[in-house]
Image (cartoon, rainbow, N blue to C red; front, side, top):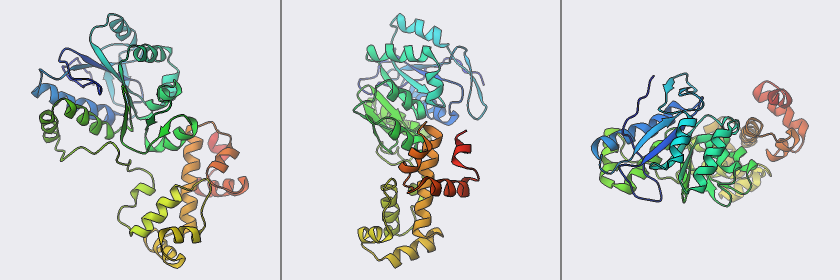
Length: 335
């Protein structure tokens, strides 16, 4: 798929729109096609209907203009990183840069990307980190003392890795000129909110074109983990599951859970069996294993620390439960 330059647009969160300004979207191999589309499509309709108030944008690749998404779709960007860096040195109207990539590791491997981030931050340019691009923002200290988010599948690991950042399970978070977004369709909500800051009429027009009733608020939880998928069970059961998810490292007893939820142990046990097909402690173990899986996949924490952070009383029990769930030992999984 070949992309050619079009007059798409986005606005800087901290300022008004300028039709002669530009936002650059840095697209690296392994990016999410859905995330990119969620940015591009609303901006296309915005620019098409309101050209006088909608800035332009361009796609920036890595060392080459050709990039490939995680689903295998090929794109041809407008400029390479080197060409875009030259553009920046001439100060020709770039207000914001959005990073759309597969993981923070890929960003770390590129000195060009790090250099671009440092220059952008010094100049006060707006920065958008989509999905796991939030990791590199945090690693560079751009999020210290601030709230931030990333995709739910790596949020726990993100929180463990960056203690100076307040990790939030939400769609997107803005801190002045820096915005982090969970990615995928959350990028669509972020862009529509940005457009609304310029023109509510334009935002409504974009929603109508994309068949969207209304954009989600930024503080809505990401619908990803086991906890967030339980929307049609009794409130007492949801409360119990939320309580478990908030107390992974130091698990609660059935009695403590029941007392906090204002019900009996027998009632909690019955609701778990009826609606989830598991006992409370079996479900608790599944939550702990989910936490361990995230930490092992996204961090370099020693396995014994992963075991402790996931609420297991002994490494032997952790290894046994992990092997039963994932059909391999923790050490083999890490390798």
